[in-house]
Length: 188
Ligand SMILES: Cc1cc2nc3c(=O)[nH]c(=O)nc-3n(C[C@H](O)[C@H](O)[C@H](O)COP(=O)(O)O)c2cc1C
Image (cartoon, rainbow, N blue to C red; front, side, top):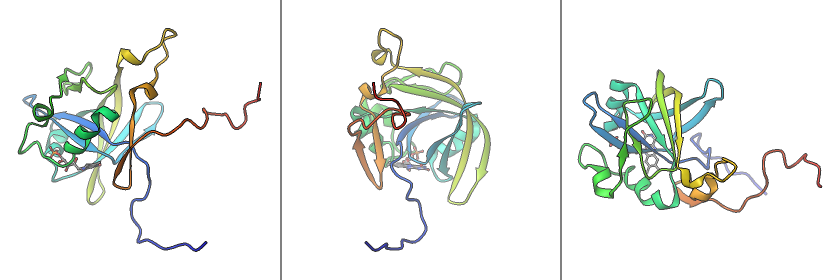
């Protein structure tokens, strides 16, 4: 089998495609889609999102230094795409999509009610990288939809039907292949 060389670019897939909520200083909210998002540290819990300066949301991120990452699901796939191709400059995306925002617990920015996991973030550093500015942030609160908790108080994200984004396409999750450490676990 031969290898074909591509020009260097972003090929790290699949990725989460998340709905990020932001607000301006007056509290006017907006929502937009981000795939350049990542976990960067466990303790303290930290994430990053990379955002182009021309996004309407970019100025809001700078103004408040806060955002909420809202995980997306099969039910939210249409909204995930829509919020990534329409700007809050021109349209009230939540109103158009019938989505509901609820206040953040630790940040002034709202959470998306329809999302199963809301990750509230406070920016610690903005790094200008080129096409994108990276907003490095500490996670200050996490809330999950109680519909996915079991009687043992365990959270089942898989029941929310999360989606991934890979090379321009949204996918539902596939079949389970094994849990963490299964390669070395003794068979009982
Ligand atoms: C799947 C997907 C992923 C995206 N990821 C990013 C991203 O990581 N960073 C970014 O700046 N824009 C990204 N975009 C584009 C913005 O979401 C889009 O320009 C949006 O309209 C910006 O909204 P706003 O102008 O209301 O802020 C993505 C779009 C889609 C559809």
